[in-house]
Image 1 (cartoon, rainbow, N blue to C red):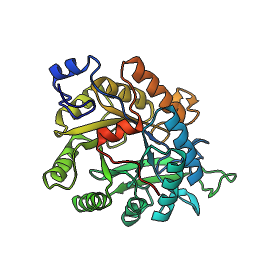
Image 2: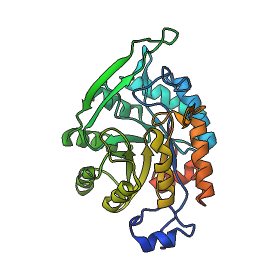
Image 3: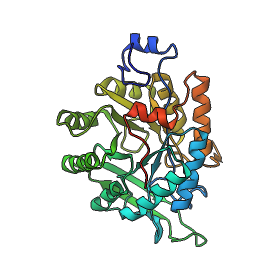
Length: 321
C-alpha cells in the first residue's frame, strides 16, 4: 500500500481494493474520444471532422476535465472517410496542442472500414504521445446513415460487413514503430483472450510499463458490457497494467462508472456514444466529460490533470509540433 498514487496494483484482490477504497485509488484519468472512424456529421452535428473542429472539441473536453484526447483524422478531400497521410495528423495534432497546451494526444491506428493497413501506420508519423494498438482482428457489421447534400462529401446510406485483420506480425510492427517514435501504446482489448497478445508483447520487451489496456465493452465482437465480464477482465489483467474502460452506446455510463469504483480509468466521447439519455443527444464532447467528472467526484475520486496523467502513465513533457 506504499505505491505512488495511481501506480498499478492488483485490482482483483478484495483486501487491497478495500484498503484503497478509502480514498486511495488515485486520481481518475479521463480520455475523450472526440470523433471516431465511422460516423460523421450525418449522425451528430458536433462530431468534428476538420482539424479546426477537432481542436475545438478537444478544447471543450479538456476544459471539462479530460487529460487525453483520442483522435481519428479525416481525409481533408473527403471528410466522410479517414485520413490516409501523416501530414493530416500532424496538422490536427498541432492544432490540438495549440488549443490544449498540456493535453495528452492519442491518435488512432485503427482507422476506419475503408483504410488500408499501411494507411493506418500513417497516424504514427503524426507523432502522437499515445496511440491505439488493437490486440486482434476487429470484425463488425453496421449501417452508416445517408450523408445529406448540405454536408461536404455527401453519400447515400452505406452497409458494411468487414474485418480489420490485425495479426501478430502487424501488431508487432505497430508496437515497434511506436517504440521508435516514443509513443505509448494504448492496447485496445476486446476480450480476455487478447491478454495473451499483450503478454507476448511484454515478454519480448516490445512495450514498457505501465501497460495501458483499454477495455472495449459492448462492441459487436467484444466482451459483453456487464459487471461480471468487467470483473473477469480484471482477473486476467497482466501485472503492472493500468486499465481504462469504454462502453459502447447506452453501456458507456454503467461501464465507466464501474471502472471508477474499481480503481480504473475511463473513456467517454462521441466516438462511443451520441446520447446523454434516451431520446436526447449529447450537446458535444464536453458534456460527456462533464458528466463522468461529476460522477467521479460524487464517488470521492478526484480528476487527474494532464500533468498528473503524464506521471501516472510514464509520459514526458508535452510534445510540440
